[in-house]
Amino acid sequence: MTIDQKQDEIIQDFELFDDWMEKYEYIIQLGKDLPMIHEQYKTDENLIKGCQSRVWLHADYKDGKLFFTADSDALITKGLVSMVVQVLSEHTPQEIADANIYFVNKIGLQSHLSPTRSNGLLSMLKQMKMYSVAYLSKTLQ
Amino acid sequence: MFNDTVSISAGLDIQKIREDFPILQTTVFGHPLVYFDNAATTQKPLTVLNAMDEYYKEYNSNVHRGVHFLSQKATDAFEVARRKVQAYINAKHEHEVIITKGTTESINLVASSFGKRFIKPGDSIIISGMEHHSNIVPWQIMCEDRGATLKVIPINSKGELLMDEFDALLDDTVKLVAVTFVSNALGTVNPVKEIIEKAHAFDIPVLIDAAQAIQHIGIDVQFLDVDFLAFSGHKMYGPTGVGVLYGKEKWLNEMPPYQGGGEMIKNVSFEKSTYNILPYKFEAGTPNVTEVIGLGVAIDYINDIGLDTIREREHGLINYTISGLQTIDELRFIGEAKERASAVSFLVGNHHPFDVGEILDKQGIAVRTGHHCTQPLMDLFGIPGTVRASFAFYNTEEEIDKLVKGVKKAVMLLG
Image 1 (cartoon, helix red, strand yellow):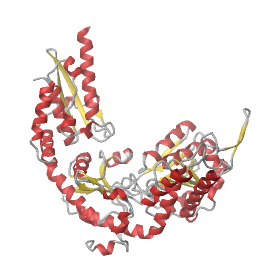
Image 2 (cartoon, helix red, strand yellow):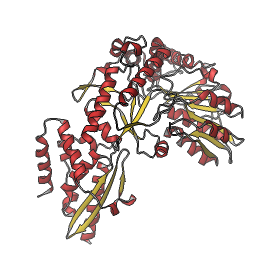
Image 3 (tube, rainbow over the protein chains, first blue to last red):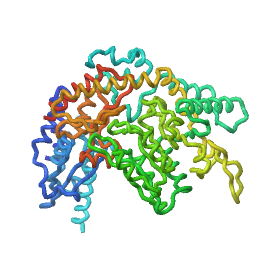
Image 4 (cartoon, rainbow over the protein chains, first blue to last red):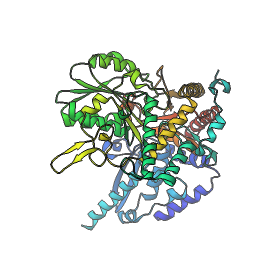
C-alpha cells in the first residue's frame, strides 16, 4: 500500500464514528494496544520533547526502507503517533520525504499538528522527514 | 454543604454578571463554553471593550506631547487610569505607578535596573520554589550578569513555603527578595506580609509578583510596605499588553532607566542625555494608550462588585470544586495549602494531564494543562504537569458540576 492509500484507509475508518467519544476511544485504544518501541530505544537521545507530552522515536534502515518505532507518555498523542508510524513505516526515504500527511487534519485532530500545541506529534513528523532526508543523501552518495 | 447555591453566590446576581461578558455566551464543540482558565487570562466585560473602542473611534491621539484637543483628552484619560491603579493598590504617589506591558516586563525592569544600580559580585537574590518562570529567569539573567547568586525558599508537599528555611537564607549578601503572592500552579496564598517584615528587618527590599493575586485579594501597598509590586491587566478583566510596576519612590529614583527612547528624557544631546522624572523615566516610547484606559475601566468594574465579595464568591467556588472532585477515586490534588485562591490543580490516576485536558476540551470545558510555566515546581512534585481549573466570580456551580462530570468521562475513556 502507498502512504496515501494507508492515509485514505484511516480516514475511511474514522468516517464510521458517530461522535467524538467513539473517535477518541478508538485512538486511545490504538495507543494502548500497540507495542511501540523497545525499552532500549526509549533514551533521551530519541526523545522529542514537546511542551505538553513527550515522544520517543527510533528509526531502522533495512533493505532500502525505513522502519519506525515510537512511543509517547500521553495516550491520545500515542494513538496518533501509532497511526503516523503505521503510515510512514516500511517506505523508502524518497517516499517519506515526499509524503504529505493529511489524515490528521481529515480526522479532525488538526490541533495536534499546531505548533502552539507542541505536543510532540509535529516534532516527530519533522524528525521522521529528517531521517528520510539523511538516508536519502546517504544512498545518493 | 456546598449545594446551596445561595450560600456561595456572595449576594451576586451571577446570571446578570455573566451578561456583562459577551464571550461567556459562546459555544464550543456544541457545548456552552465553561471557562476555567482564568489564571491564564480572564474574560473582559463590555464596559472595558466599549471604552477601548471609544478611544479609537473618538479621541485616538498620542499622549503627553500634543498641544491639541484630542491629545489632551487622551492624556487625561491615560492619567485618570493611572490614578485608578494608584487608588486600587493605595500607592502613596501616582508617579510610583509605572505602566508596563505586563508582569513579565515589570519584573524584568526591576531585575535590570535594580540589578545595575545595587547588585555586586557575591550578592544574592531570594526567590521561592513555586515561582512562575517570569519570576525566575529575569533574576537568573541578572545574577549571571552581576556575578550574584540565586537562592530559593523551599516548599513542603502541600505547596506551602517553608518559612523557617526563609529565615535561614536571610543574610548580608541578600539584596532583594522576589516572591509570588499567589502560586499560579497551586493556588497557594503566601504570607507576604510576614515575608516583607522579615526581609525589612535586614533592610532587604521585597518584590511581590501579584499576577495571580491582584484580581482576587485586596492589596494595599502601604499597609504591606512592599517595595515593588508587579501585575498584569489581562488577568484582572482588562486587556492584554498592559501591566503595572509599583515601586517605592525612593527605589525608582535611584534606579537607572530600563529602556531609552521618547518620553523618558528631559534633554537629549549627542554628548549626554538627561532623564525625565517619575513615572516617565521608565515609560519609553508611546504607551498602550487604549489598553491603559481599558485597565482603568476594568478596575472600575472590580470596584463595583467589590474585592471582598469577589473573594467570598471565589472561595465558595473553590470549596465547591474541591468537594466535587473529591468524589473521584483516582483523583489527587497537587497543592493543598491552607490559604489558597484562584486555582485547583489535580491529576487523575496515571493519566497524562494533556489527555484529560483534551477530553475536557471536547466537552466545551477550558482548563490549562502542563507545567504552567513552573517547571522547577513540577520537578519538585515529580510530575510532568497538572490539570488546572482556575476561577473567576462569573463561574457557576453548574459549570463546576460539568467539570466533575467531564473528568469522570475522561477517566472512563482513558481507562
